[in-house]
Length: 284
Ligand SMILES: C[C@@]1(CC(=O)O)c2cc3[nH]c(cc4nc(cc5[nH]c(cc(n2)[C@H]1CCC(=O)O)[C@@](C)(CC(=O)O)[C@@H]5CCC(=O)O)C(CC(=O)O)=C4CCC(=O)O)c(CCC(=O)O)c3CC(=O)O
Ligand SMILES: NC(=O)C1=CN([C@@H]2O[C@H](COP(=O)(O)OP(=O)(O)OC[C@H]3O[C@@H](n4cnc5c(N)ncnc54)[C@H](O)[C@@H]3O)[C@@H](O)[C@H]2O)C=CC1
Image 1 (cartoon, rainbow, N blue to C red):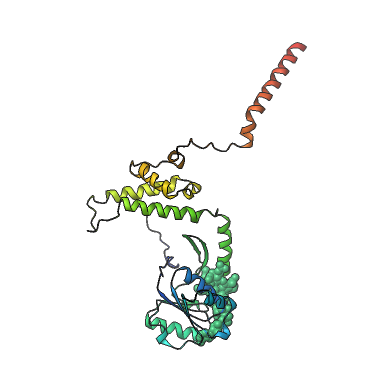
Image 2 (image 1 turned 180 degrees about the vertical axis):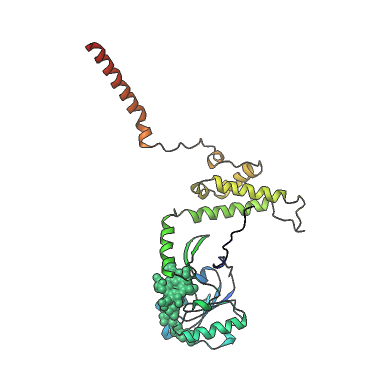
């Protein structure tokens, strides 16, 4: 095994926090709060939003109207620690740093994780620039150094993506779920009778499918093709290609312009050499 790195530390923990059906309190209703609402709704949590109506940004207003069953809105100022206790997370986006500070303190006492958009040093976690394509979620963080730089890095990364990744990953998710049904990770007893041999074979096979298949081919994994891949691949312990599964001949590699013209150019050159030799021989 490789040695552990020497200069470890100085970063933050990058995790995909599961918030389904959890309660998130957002204090403040400006533009920053509106983007917090987007992020929290994407994670399927329930939002309690506390902000006086006169300070609401149009975007925030729109979201409150659009998702009445997912956002419980209170037209008032934050009222105190009682608002925090039942929360799984608190986000403040206020124009009043003193207030943000007080709320952070209350959260710390109640051991509720908190992010204050205007006070990085009091945040338990930071937001980042996000790229989302279905199940693919990429977060770019500069760890508080340059939020605008995170937005610029996002644009760079976006240009490197084809747009097919989310769909391909979604289909891999369905394949994995079907495979786990055929070869369950653990029996109800919680103890693998074969010492984990099946589990290791399952993971190796799954990794090989991801490694060997083109992204484009993975997007073609409809339900019927998944069943076929499991029958003819997993059950026989091989990883067939999409072409093999569909009974197609291997697709030809695209030929370059040059190799396409090579035979014609070659024949012409050979003809020219022969003609020159004949003429030269006649002259002599
Ligand atoms: C620490 C952090 C806390 C947190 O918010 O979690 C934080 C803090 C602060 N941001 C401030 C300003 C700006 N923030 C942005 C933009 C974004 N800020 C985001 C995250 C974070 N911002 C966290 C660190 C993330 C990291 O380091 O990677 C992004 C990535 C995600 C998001 O907010 O959802 C989102 C881009 C998303 C996208 O475009 O995709 C822009 C540019 C713009 O709006 O285009 C500016 C103006 C230019 C500038 O200052 O750089 C100020 C006021 C500073 C002041 O008053 O001078 C503070 C407070 C302070 O630093 O004191
Ligand atoms: N982290 C980030 O990405 C960024 C953070 N910021 C910071 O985020 C904060 C919010 O920015 P904006 O949304 O543009 O501000 P904003 O001024 O548009 O909104 C502030 C909101 O807080 C509400 N508010 C004020 N006191 C309140 C209280 N006691 N209880 C409930 N609600 C209250 C106001 O009614 C308003 O809705 C600012 O401090 C700003 O400096 C700004 C840009 C980016």
